[in-house]
Image (cartoon, rainbow, N blue to C red; front, side, top):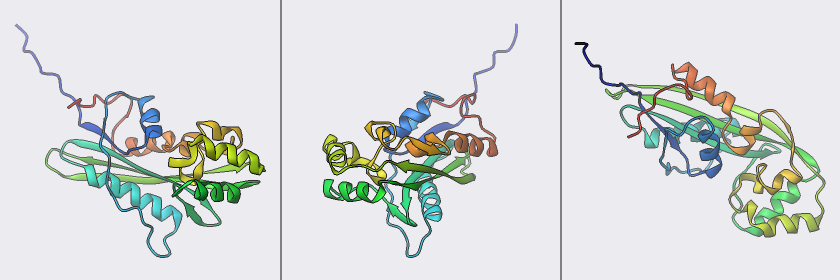
Length: 208
């Protein structure tokens, strides 16, 4: 009689994010992941470059929720105009001002991504990278800005617009990764996973 071998699964895959856009993007690749919201201070440091900022936050988010036998994805996305980071609007007046600033010009969207693999013995390996895409916004009329702000879509979006929603009406010209603008650059994620020896699609992730 042959000897039975128990099925061996890999580590647990965790997305350290509260963003429904990132849930949606990662779900295109695998359903075998857990979401844990990372509570980190997102205040930029003095004179911190946007690239350094998103990479630092991505790593901080991953480390906040990491544990033994896990692979954690941390990410942060910022809209950058004139080297200034535009975060989520504080209110609709703030959203209106951001859109006025972005109209009739191009800006950068920068995402930092960190993949932190922690073994059962708590040893760690980490890969961190960033992606930059350029987005052009049309010359929006005040009426169009008022309409968009009234939809409520800008309320929880960095830079006050969402490419995957109604914002795609006026911000659909992208140079670079579209998934980056939405919040999780898939090409970069795949590269970082590969660097650590994982395939987000093919790895048999633990389910608990």
